[in-house]
Amino acid sequence: MAKIAKREQSATAENVQTAKNFKLYWIGGLMSLLILIAQFTYKNALDNQFVSWDDTMYVTENPMFLQYGKPAMPDVWKTPIALNYHPLTMESLLLNGQNLGKKAESDARPFISTNIWLHAFNCALVFLFLLMLTEGSWFVALSGGLLFAVHPMHVESVAWVSERKDVLYSFFFLLASVTYLQYLKERKGVWMLAVIVLFVLSCLSKAMAVSLVPVLLLIDWYKGRSLTSTKVWMEKIPLFALALLFGLVAMDIQKGGNFHGFFNNIEGYKSALASGENLSMLNRFIFAGYGMMQYIFRFFAPVNLSPFYPYPVEELQGLPLPINYGLHLLLFLLIGGICWWSLRFTKSIFFGFLYYFFTVILVAQLISVGLVVMADRYTYLPYIGLSAGLLIWLEKLTVQHRQLKYTTWALVFVFGAFCMNQTMKQTDVWQDTETLFSSARKLYPKDENILNNLGLHYGKTGKLEESRACFEEALSVPYPVRQATIYEGLGNYYGINNNPQKAVEMFDKAIAINPLKGNFYYNRAMAYMSLDLGKAEQDLETALKYIPMNDRDKVYLLRGYCYLKQNLFQKAIDNANTAMKQGIDTEFLHYQMALANFNMGNREEAMKQVNISLRMNPNFADGKTLKAQMGG
Image (cartoon, rainbow, N blue to C red; front, side):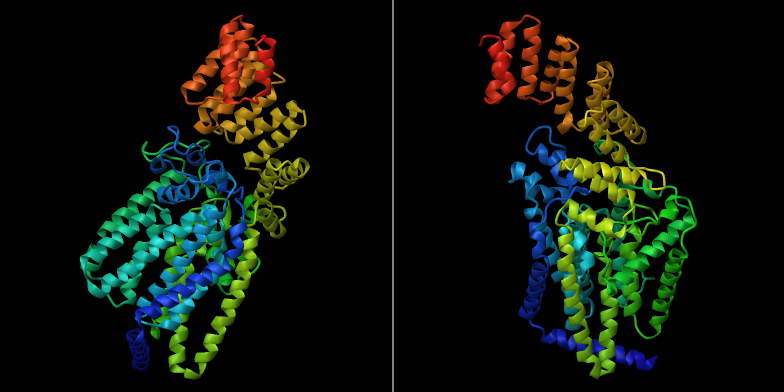
């Protein structure tokens, strides 16, 4: 043990001496180099498009963008998005979109560019963090920053617009980590205050930031502070309190709550935990071990990456899991034991393992979030731990065996080049929705959720037969269908193909699965318009209870036509007036009022309304026709 301690002291002394020789311009130069490498690696992503997977909720169909600057715009700080509360992330997205107008729905470049810049800055911060952590190891800092910049498992966090939360929370997380190391160096309260502020900013970007608290304690241990010291824990009381608050908020929102009325409700609230709510405790641990072990494998061999890693079919069918899953858990526990044993000769390996564990455990499916057993984006910060532990240990080996120095550098360079090439390929997977889910389908051809997303995309882009084929294949999967949107997609297909009765059957099934989504009722009303106007009217009334404010114009418009078809002219006028009181004012509503008044014999009011509709849209054909009929 004495020899080991002497070797570690030798490595540390060498690092300290290196740090003294490091001029600020060298540090700045290497940080700038990493920023350039990250920018170059992700340049192919700049022409990517939005994808119909959360990007609709975050940007393209988000009321915050569609109603930007209007009184009806939702309050960013009181509105969870996609069952997450991250107002700072939404503010940053709004900054990208506020000058684009309607283009915000189609131009993804500024959003992706910002993600890339944030990732590039994070690479520089990883370099600085590792440099300070190791007291001047340029090998660890530069290699760690390089691997962070080019690892293909990070593509999902950078190239996907909706994952702005990942790169943004990590930016503040890393800044807080660097600031905390400065606090340990100077022991001035102002640095600790800055850590608290940065922690809040990180939590407001993504709730996963709560993992900073155990990471700071881990840094304390690595830097030689005693975890039995009262001061070590007392100084972190504000962080613990804030972590508890943000954790409670996140859990409540993901269960579909509004945190005691503080937040606005979102249409079709559905628990993000739903996919795993029936998992046994044993299977939760098995899936957690499987995911965490798979992430370690993919750190070293980042191949066959997918945007979607579904639960095994056996789990969905209620059958015993393949032995492979249990073996992953056992192997992960074995690796944890080996890392613990490594404390006999170094702290670095156990430090790296614990950093990885603390930053990944909250998304390791012990509490199942979403429809996947694992996701590339969950490795964004955890891989810093794996890199740090491995690189610090490798550097110590080169101190003991100097002939390994250039071999180690060569290995890092070759692996970095391989990762860069893989990353550039992986950015193209996120080119658009079809490319994204077609890529996932190659690996998981029978997954219901992949087929559902691909079918929805085909439906939106007019590829109706391809859409129907995807939905019907999803329904053929031999386990219970959970996705209401599969039936919605088929309902839309039958509606477009003039089969309203079949469309109603599909929408009935969609509503049975999710009775809180207004669009399902609206779409069923569309089908009922040619079958039963009374039922259409009922569905439109229900749709108004659940559909978001920015989408209500179509409901009022269809309800107006429903009243007109029933010769309920005064109801059509009242419907239009109700819509206008809510800030919904279109040429179609004025046309409906004109048509209703014309049929009631109120020619003067009818002419007034049709003229308003034509002022709003001089090319409005129906308005011109009605005006001509009235002799105007």
